[in-house]
Image (cartoon, rainbow, N blue to C red; front, side, top):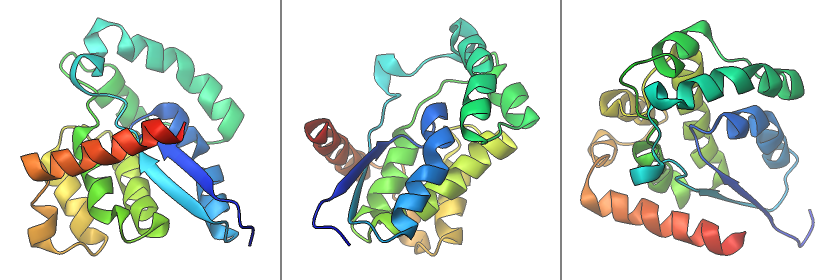
Length: 170
């Protein structure tokens, strides 16, 4: 293992990050010294509404991401998320999920990332579905009382602090 550290900055609900996920996982699998940060790209005014053009942009880019990476986007994602008249792509809850696992290491954080990507890009579950995110955390072994912290101001602050660190790493 090298003395160098690989820093991976990602957002669970970024389609390009989803496309790169197998590479991220391979870096971990070969035993590289890795530090990961959830960037929380989609928040506030940067949280796009699918009905205001983001959905069409995503649908246009999906074939390119699939061709370059081999990752696939389900028809459920395309219909329930990208074509939704009400979906707002907001990664605050996934950033909080990442913050819960961050101190346990990249493998634990990326296990949650993978489960949330499967829900979102595979099953078409909204990025704003707090119950689904809590259930995913519990399925990954997070204690229910910890998982229930999703959506609290304290956990939002922890996620924001990690996103701020990610900015510094660029």
